[in-house]
Every structure is written in C-alpha cells, then in structure tokens.
Image 1 (cartoon, rainbow, N blue to C red):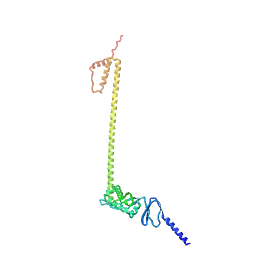
Image 2 (image 1 turned 180 degrees about the vertical axis):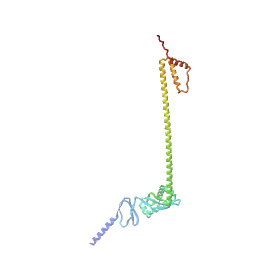
Image 3 (image 1 turned 90 degrees about the vertical axis):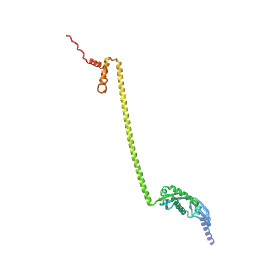
Image 4 (image 1 turned 30 degrees about the horizontal axis):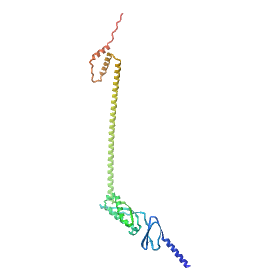
Length: 301
C-alpha cells in the first residue's frame, strides 16, 4: 500500500515536470534558453520542450517594432540658449541573443544614448537652426543611434523630435516677431491689393476711352460713307437727268432757261463765291422776253 502511494506520487511529479517542460512561444516573441547558466538556443514562435531543472527560460522578448517616448532633456544650443527637447525612438529587436547579452538594461541604455546624442547634435546648432532643422536633426540622430546600437541586436527605425521648448522670454520675443511679420505681410498685401485695384481702374478707363474713340471713329466713317453715298446718288441723278434731257433734244432757249435756274440756286445766299457767266446779258434778255406780256389784239368794229 505504501509502495502504491509512493508510485502515484512519483507519477504525479513526473506529469507536472513534463507539463512544465512544454512551452508554446507566441508569434513575434522570442525566448532565450540557458542550460546550467550558459546560452543554449533561442526559441521563436512555436512548440518547444526544455529539459527540466537544468534549462532556464528568459522573459519573452518582443520582436515587434516598439516606440519609446523619452522625457525632455535640457540642452544648450550653440548660442548658449537652454531648451527642453524630447525625442521619440522607434526600434526593433533583430537579434534576441545580442539584445540579452551585449547590453545591460537595453531600454535604459537606449534612453541614455538618445539623450547624449541629442545634446551632441543640437549643441552644434543655434536656436533658429534647431527650430528650422527638425528633419536634419532626426536624420542625424537616426544615423548615430543606428551605428551605436547595431551591436545590441537592435535596429533603430525612426527618431522624431517631439517638442522643442525655448525659454519663456525667447518664446515671447518670437511671438512678437511673428506678430510684426504678420502685420508687415498684411500691409504688403493691402498695398498690393490697392495697387492692383488702381491698375484695374486705370485699365478700365483706358479701355473705355479706346472704345469711345473707336465708336466715334466708326461713326465718322459711317457719316462720311453716307455723305459719299449721297453725293454719288445726287451725281447719278444729275447724270440721269442730263441723259434724259439730251435724249429729248431741248432748244437753246430751254437750255438758257435751265442755266438761269442754276444761277438762281447758286445765288441763294449759301455760296461764298459766285461766278457770273459772260452771257449773263443774254440770259437777262431771255428772261425779259419771257416775262414781256403778249400784245393785245385789235378789235374791229
């Protein structure tokens, strides 16, 4: 009976030891296995069995890209201005063995390395260059941190400056400068707007005068064409009248009478110069003959 109880106890202990030796590593995780204190192997995602008692497992190491937001650090720029700067570092563990054995407290080491590198990079710049050169600072930090952490089995993916805070008096001066620049740009825009408005008004007046002159020119051309057309029509009418007059073969007296009528029209007061034909006496005699009353017939008783 005692032997059976001891046997069952040994079986239970064996089952528990066997169950404790079975491990399932999830995706994007890695575990370091040490046997009797020495590195044995690295377990990645999947099913694994370790030797009981003599093998020891480390804490799971994440193989995902991680982000660490380090607290702000006081940094002195090249022009002796103290600013508060904090950085965000994105990194990924590529070699769990190097990450475990090549550096003590990797996150603390990465924080200290980031702070010292940030002081070195920003200390070479003035405050204006620091505020305007975020991309250059990020690129320089990425280069230096990547080189330093390569032996740690860590890949630095990105480095971003989160906040750059100058002293309060510097911030106040920058705000005043910004307000001055904004007012200056506003004044320039207002002047340009007024200038553009004046130019547009002048161009409108110019176009109006041009259109008015073109209208007057067109009107004058039309009047001249109308007068020319009138004279042409009158000349054609005179020519037609002369043609018809020649066709009926008028007598000399008729021609002299027409000449007299023309002379009367010329002397109606509108002409500034009158040319008297040399045969005016004959025309006058003709008109007298025409105006003389006919003699009365004698009546016989």
